[in-house]
Length: 155
Image (tube, rainbow, N blue to C red; front, side):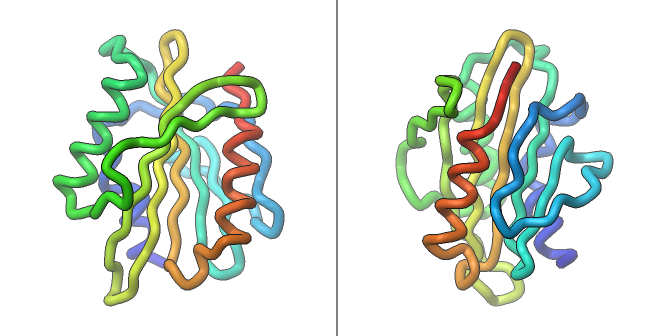
């Protein structure tokens, strides 16, 4: 579990100052956790797949492409292997457009999946992370995570 927390926390240190999280519906079968100091929202499945949200002030006034590229660069430099060369367009139920990056990494000798979905609003960068052991990050879990991210309300 410690390694999984590191998996989620390590690559996003360029987004440092936490603010309040936008609403997100927990995926079905997930339990909400205390957000802690790093995240605004966290939830986990019984098998350890986690979803987390953080929102930061966009002090650099970067657009969606800037933040997507910055996170991708940092994650690749940290040893994450991109599953796709280009980020995929992602849209919430409210029509807010973001970009999703998908990665794989080995943790404790086991393959893990790591998704980062980025949204930029007036003054905020919102990052939704999902990660877990590849054996438990199955098709049904991926669909539930997608539904949760689509429920995101950026206000």
